[in-house]
Length: 375
Image (cartoon, rainbow, N blue to C red; front, top):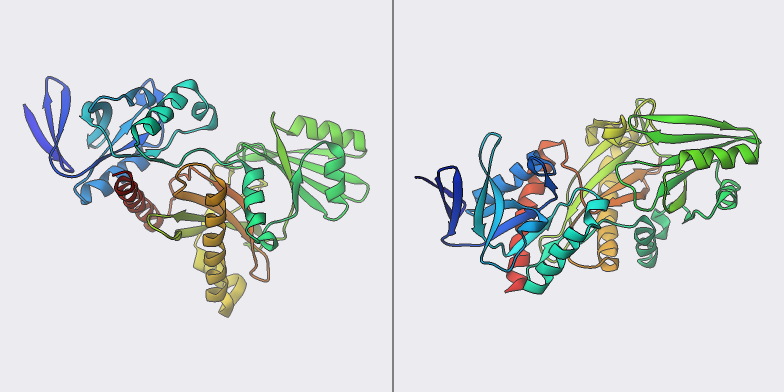
């Protein structure tokens, strides 16, 4: 029998079976979906969080909805080395980090049962659910932050698009339940004609519309199923000739929201968004800020950070459950004024090493805080 400590838990491996016995402090879990390989999600990010827990002597393991029972031990997965994930029976966690990887899975009966069971047992979990764009914008407006929100309204058909285009040369249509730029459509007014761009993976598909009927047909082809909002395009700063915005990671391990860090995302040549999976790329934030704003860089940085914290607090107040983490996409105009474009309840792992490390450590802080609240 092989024995090793994983955080404060003694793992015993015999005949391919792993069991864990708690000795000191709490165990925490990361909730994700099932997969033929055992579990879905970013194993790289899960590895980082588990390692951050180990540094504090805390066990963190991965679970799926079927792991959630009222027993003292749960079936989950631990990482015992490079690409070496083992299933094990482990101590029931005191708090859970929700990383269900998409909206469809989060709405599934299995996940709903798991969430209900966690609530019934008094085990806190964050983040509660994916955000709805319309509710995010409404929350920001209620908080008196309207000046940071591009003119936005619900899509109700062609007339709602034309109404906004009477005041703006370009508008975006965004799916209420979208993420990482999927399903976004841009409409540019060109005299009496229109250009329609629909984001498709790493490139944007282009339609031309010379009549209103052409425009209606193009919008029908470009949109994904489901509800949309329309948002006026903001003239954001450019880096090497390409539009860019800031991806800001925020966490609340205690009383106040803090900015873990942010990076600049630059739109790809054939993309209408700055999301890296859609062809965008990463630029160093200070390089961009200093090139665009010069001696005002520190002032603009402070303004962006202050607004991001205020926006996160406003969004938290409007959402159910424990909202302790989010990323927001913030555009900057040439005056250095921040504009809120998106908010994401399940941020992807940041590529910037310092932000990635801070995020993992912050998740452990949040879980520890929630565990204290539940006692």
